[in-house]
Amino acid sequence: MALNWPSLALSDEYAIRSQRDLTLNVSIDQLVNPAINLNSVLLEPLNYTSNTLTNIAAIIRRGVSRVFLDLYWNSQTSAWQLCPFIAEDNTSSNTSTAVNGTSSDGIDSGFSSSSETGIFLYNGRAYTCNTTITFSVFLSDVLKEQWIYHTDDNLSAQTIVLTMNLRSAKSAAALNAGDEGSVGTTVTQQATTSASSLRSESVTSTASRATVAASDFDNLATQIKNVLGEYVYTPVMLESDRSTNRTWNDTAVSSQGWPLLQDVLFKDFYRVLFSFGEIDVPSSEYDTRLDFDYIFSADDIPHSGNGALLYTSEFSSAELEAIPSPVCTISDGDDIGITSSGARVKPSWLIASDTSDSPFSAVAILQYMKCGYSPVLNATLGSSNEILQYLVSALESSRWSWKAGQPTEELEPVPTGGATSITGGSGEMRRCAALTDDGWSVENCFSKYLVACRVAKGPYNWTLSQKKVSYYDSISACTGNTTLSLPRTALQNTMLQTLRQSVAGPDPVWIDMNSIEQPNCWVSGGPGASCIYATSNRESIEVIVPTVAAIVVALLLALTLCSKLLGYKQVKARRKRRRIVKKFGEMEYDGVPVNNSIYVHNHAATDELIVF
Image (cartoon, rainbow, N blue to C red; front, side, top):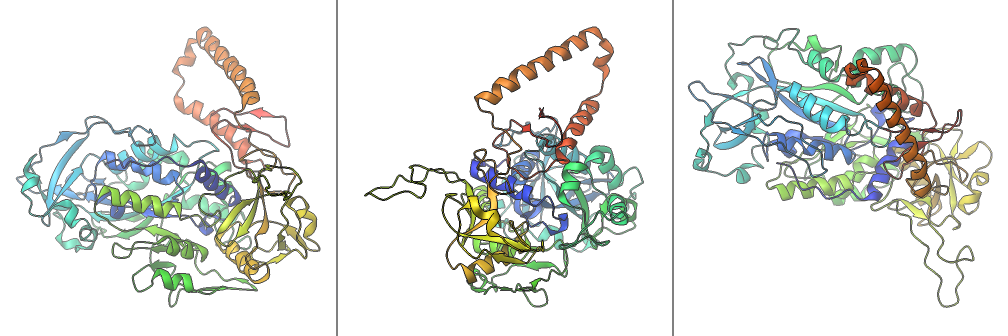
């Protein structure tokens, strides 16, 4: 079912975009964002239907950058599907027609109205399951239609990792419509106990082994190539990037590193990386070696072992909160030591998962992110309201940069009782960012604080200015081999936070982030930094409307004069648009747009209007 998502607050949109922007020069394996297990959180407690899948676009829009998904091999159809079941022999399901779904974000589900939904009985529980949602359908109707096509611009584009667990579909009795009520226990009662049952069964207890192994045409890589080829970053591309020194670790160029987010997202336009998770399907049924050109192995992008932690009740929120800085200890054998000499990061792609018994608290999420771990939402809850509350709370807590509710520009209160405002005026706007105990916060630019200065461009080496200054004097406050800067990863932020607490105490510290030139356009580069986006205010609209109208008139005239243009495929228009976006990817990208009207300023060329 589609959850009733609340509207995303403007401050959350600005925070998500600005955090994406400031990490563009960070390798993709070092990014710290929330992740989700779709089966545990959504599909198993709700149902395996198109309406449930409409939630994915809303989840990714809220900052999720890694998705875990179980795929089930149907030995009868020789296809990968999202439904965990195959109808037992001599049973057939009465199917009902699923209505096209629309998410609460207004995105059409994209699924055909002829989608078939059946009811399966497994281990005493009735599951609603759409057996026609194959892997190809998921790629096309969910990832491509609902997410990529709706975010294929510089405002909301993001790159995600889809980790696939491969399993064999299980034989289950297919019920007739209405018979599900005879099942002894309800779905809600069993939701929290059934999460592992579909994954923990031995492969020998699954569907019949009289199967037809996947051919080259049926393999996962071929389906990915056919549906999403131009949007996928592959192991072959990584090998090429490593051989040409285009990959980094957390400190420098590395032949074992990963490309920068800037290169992947805005220069090459790749939106998805695919990786293997758990593989429970025998090699006699499916050979994953067929997919290695398109799908990363578990060694490349880990999902377990060193670098993958489990949050349990034995590790309480109170204990997490009490962990002293600068040491950031997660669990035995998986420590990340953060000291005054810098951070020691072990593996890349660090993750920490919660459980149904111990769902993440807000404190736990922030503590893991502080230590460089991306929190994986993995808890299975009962009702849709519980699931929605869990997701909204977790995703709102999973930003390591801005504190909750920020950035929000506000007027400085007018002084009362004869007091004088900081600037001598009244109602000054707060448009400069400072690091506080709770994260980044918007402050009055004329307030005087110490300044965060990066030492010799080292990622983890910080110092604070010798004196307190206003934001307008922040650049000159960093002297010698130090420069005004801001943290670009969670670990860098932790190092700076440790220094701030030891030197400045409870006082804020200026960081290189402001919206001085343009309201709600958050950029780095000091007080004089230019906003590379323009708002859709009255002046911009007067420029945009005639320009767009002229383009439309010219296009209609061209179509009238040359009927052959009617045969052009949509992909040509899309590639043209992507070439325009590429110009944006080659620019300095350090701002946060205010809304969906984009006016990009290229310092190396004339001003250019880009319409998506």
